[in-house]
Length: 406
Image 1: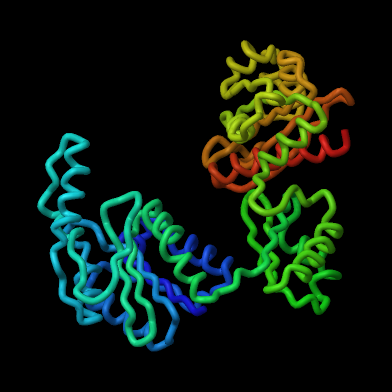
Image 2: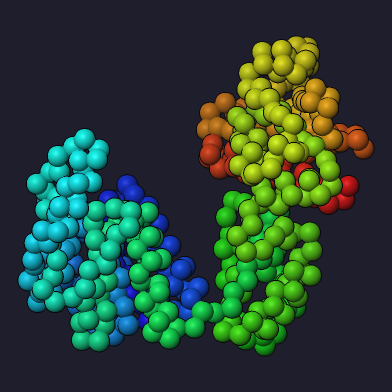
């Protein structure tokens, strides 16, 4: 089943809005066995829309899925342009207009006249219901290619894909692929690929995709049959060992929390440069209260002294960003919360605040446990947000590996 994706929106071209719709659609349809042959982004203009539809149909895809441009404002012209392209006239749907009017009344509002566009339906073609919004979609059979038009609002598009479009495609005989995803942390993509070469260079018959991020690398294995996927999954997992923290959609934070629960260990945090990000990530997981005893955000020297009893002479002689301060932060937070593990982070997130001796990106991470306390020094980049995320990930991965050995 061949699919082309057309995203409409000036905001997507300008970069003001990230095109998450195309990513979501591509992944969902690939997962069920489709092949996305092209993905294009175009402006809210009639000629580019018409030209793009004509170009897509030349490729003879089974479906062209269009998102965006179905709102009530003047610049939302996809509906009219699509109707013109397939030679359909528009009819005003009085029944749907009454439904929309009632919706607005429930919120104490009179429906704007501009919303009348959303009650237009084609003389030939089908309407796709919108279970969460007002902009319905449409479906046309154009010379053997189905043209599907959906709103650009992600929540609405996703609901309509799940309830209408994906079931429609599955009914046409598409067979879902067998897919397994290995989730890794603490190993860069280049090293990972080398480490698993013994498995991947065999004639396994699977498609392999690598998806790196600041949090780790996901390895996606797919094949129409489950046995080759399962075999390769097991081989790669064995080669990577502790670098694998989970599979499928299991989050890194969930893996840490479940591991701590299994080991019956508790955690506390003392954060400076991350501003509470580690604690936030841990508490995103239901059940984290069983292991996370609490955290302190000690951003200033005053907070470090008052809340963690860090001596002023240590801060003056060694500095807030130092191995010695990180060590005492980890020790003291562990003691204050009576936890099994104490994590500390202190560093220079940037982009300002660095010196020649202590540049932006310098971070110290401390980990205290019953065996003692260790501190590691890291040098990240100049980007503040990335530095905070990397610090939180390295700290949590160090905790994960320590829990595995506990």
